[in-house]
Image (cartoon, rainbow, N blue to C red; front, side):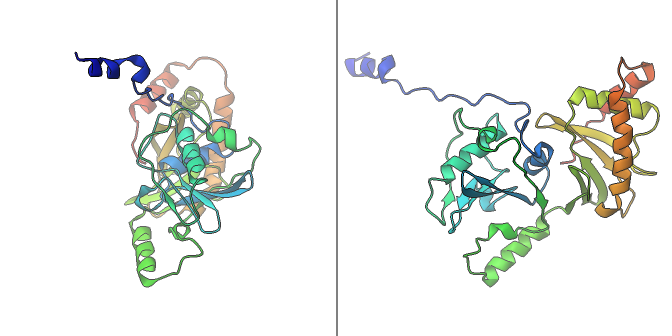
Amino acid sequence: MGKKSRRHATPENAKPKRREVPFVERPFEGLPAETDLVAMREILPSASAELDIDGTPVLFVTLLPDQLPALRREDGTVVVAFQTRMRSGDASRDIAHAYTKALELEPGRPLYLSELPEPGTRLQDLIPAGEPLTVTVHQGFEYWVDPATERTAELEEALDAAAGNAVPMEAVPGVTSAYWTRMGKEFLRWIRPEPEYDLLDALARLQSKRQTDLEDGARLIGAFRTCGVLVPVWELNPGTEADELTGACRDFEGRLQEALAVDGPLDADERRARAGLIARQVSLR
């Protein structure tokens, strides 16, 4: 090895190794509306949440054109997407990183990122725990358009095309994080805040008593796990709409809370029901 090669191989001349973001199993834990934020990250095609961070108006959205991580509008509003191409092991860190980078943009500019973030600020560091946060589900993507932008025929056509490609989805009125969708059939996905194993035990207790149907004919078909929480999924009666589910969801919530309050180990029937629930993992996203 020549002198030049040896010089470049010395530790003091080596490029510092990037620090990887540690994996966080439940990235939105502790944030207001945690389960709705999980929905924005994982299942909702079009939704938004407005808030103010240190005097800067911020709009969190599910998706931006070309899966941009963020942009800055002409009025200074920072728009940050939850669903992007680049993902580290911590969704909270990814979104906070996009926000802080977007603050550096000139108004009217999009944000482009070429590499994953290193450890640093998370959403929990930016949003006070008691801050009210309301997620609104949309049927289109009007929030893509800066109010300062001229609404051309081409723009309207693009918005209509995007809305036409989105899966119909609505929040069940008066029920936290319960989302109706139509994918050939009608389904309900209900993102739950309880610890996964506690919820599984409670569902198993109900299943052993045949009490997991949301209503007659609306059966629990399984659950999937995402962002550290469990999402039970029901196949609904044909033609069921979101606004018809409020009463059934509230009734089920009552049964579930009673099951969650039961202490002690599962009996044999409940253990079999629990094993069946685990075996019926679904991928209805």
